Every structure is written in C-alpha cells, then in structure tokens.
Image (cartoon, rainbow, N blue to C red):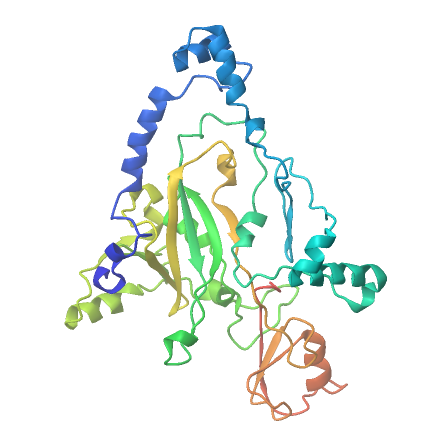
Length: 401
C-alpha cells in the first residue's frame, strides 16, 4: 500500500521499524546513565556539581550559578503567564495565575482602531451587560481536548515502570463520508479517541477500548430495553473485526462465530492485478503491541460491523515517563476524546435525538430524528396507537450513550 500513501514523501511518517527493539536499546543506555536516586537540591551536593562541570574554584562556580539563574530571563514589561479559558473549560498550568486585564493607554486607544473597539466593548460590558455577549474563543479543531484531558502529575514515581515500560500512543479517527465527487468539499478527518497502551497489551485490548456509536445500534424488532433483558446491540451480535497494520490483517477470533473480514480483501487482491498485497494474517488477541512492526504516523485501518472503517495511527511510541500515570492498572488509558458533534431533535431543535423514523408521512424529511418526548407526543395517540404507519428505530447518539 506504500505506492498509494507514499510514506517516503511525508515527513511525519517514519520508516518501517520495530519499536520494541529500538526502545530496548534505549532502556539499556538509560540503565547505565540514569542515577540511582532522584537528582534534586537535596540529593545533589554543590561539590558534585562542580565536579560535573569541571570547575574547582568556589568563586567561579558561584558566578556561574548566578549567571544561570532563571530570574535573569525575565525582562521588563514582559507579559505575565496566564491561564487560557476556552468554551470547553480552562487550560491551567502549575503555579500559573489567571489572566487579568490591564488598563488601555489613551495613546493606544486613539492610535489603533482595534484598541479603540476593545475599549468601547469594555465600556459597553460595564454599562449594559445584557446587550453584549461575552467573548469566547471558538475552536474548529478539537486539538484543545488533548490539553484539557491532561492528567494530574503523579505524586510519586514508580521506578519499576518509569523508563522501563513501552507506551504506544494510538489515535482512532472518525470515519469519513464521501458524499460528493469534489475532494475539496470533504472535511478533514478528526480523531475520536487517543488511547495509550503498554507493550504487554494485546491488540484486542486496543479494540476493547475503542468506542463507536455503531456498536450501540439496536438490531432486530425489539428496540427498547426491558427490566429483565436489554435489546440486542450490534456490538454484542456482530463481534467480528480486524486491524490492518503494515500489510497484515489481525483478526478477532475470540468468538467462535466471528467472520474473517480479511478473506474477501485477500482474494480480491490475489485475483486482480491491482498492485495490492501480498497480505498476511494473524490473530488479534495473540499479538502484543511489542510484537508489531509499523510506521509511526502511518494511517492503518480498524474495521468492524462489516464495513465500518476507522483510520488508526500510532502517533508516538516511547518509554513511560515520570509525568505519566505510574500505575499499570491505569492502562490502557483513554488519554483524550475528540469533539463529538451530536444529532439534535429535528422537531424541537434542543434535545439530542434518541429515535429516528422512516417513511413517516407526517414529517417533511426521511429519515427524521426525534428526542424521546417529541417522538412520543408527535407520533402516538393517547391510547398508544400510531398516528400513521412508519418504521422507527432507537438512535443512540455518541453524546447520549
């Protein structure tokens, strides 16, 4: 598939490698150079520092310490560090104060139109708060979610895992809809989840952490859960799936009724001269992350529910650091979620949709999405009979599940 994606022409895609072998050599180097105890002001003496930098004279060393003081980097009139507030919450640094407004000088107000408008906006907010909405920084991209999901720094460092465990950072992307023939009309692919796994985790552990709303779709005639039995969901009925990574299909065989989705692709590539393949097959639940050979930054594929495809990218492979969660039970870790756009009720335009109808003569669109209240009040009489014939299905939005 390299002749299609052209990985050598894309600087963010690495060469084909075995991350476990590379990180093993790195771990051996760290074991030789890493100090036996944490290096801080209490454990490291000034005599040790003088020996490390090769300075024996006390006066010269004190002059070096004064020169390297971080306070020397502060300049007069420098902007204060501040916390950034977004529509999703705040991005806060350790010991970073909140943003505070400073007075606008008169010279700037009469010289720049942007400063004049800002001053006018501030005055309007003070005098008539109802007439002016609060400014918010809107983001089309969902990159801020990664920062908002920043876990708290661990209080203690677990030396059994830090610089010893391999961390695989995997991003799962939302499937793209090709509705037009014009490529420019397609939105950029957006990620759904970022999942961190350790080297001993299986590929099946990655699949179990992937959340997709299609797995929650209810199949069959019964669309409503009962107290004794819940309605059958697609993820519980159709359990087949595979990962395609570096020319190999990793199939899920944990259920005896699972279908090998890769067989039809392998046959298609073998019978035709399409330049695809040859492909190999392995078992998903028997393959560790450390067993993989891959390209970092390369788009691989996760397929489930027959033909529902997600792009999967290993965007980083590294050793577990002291700022990462230190407990092995914390992994696989859902590191962050992408922005989830919900489907609203087409009747009230307020609530998230929970039902969808087809061939409904009383609505202008087909299919038509309803919230629970609008669905019951609009489509049913008081005695429970339908207002007209239609087919209905329970709809589980990603934001309502």
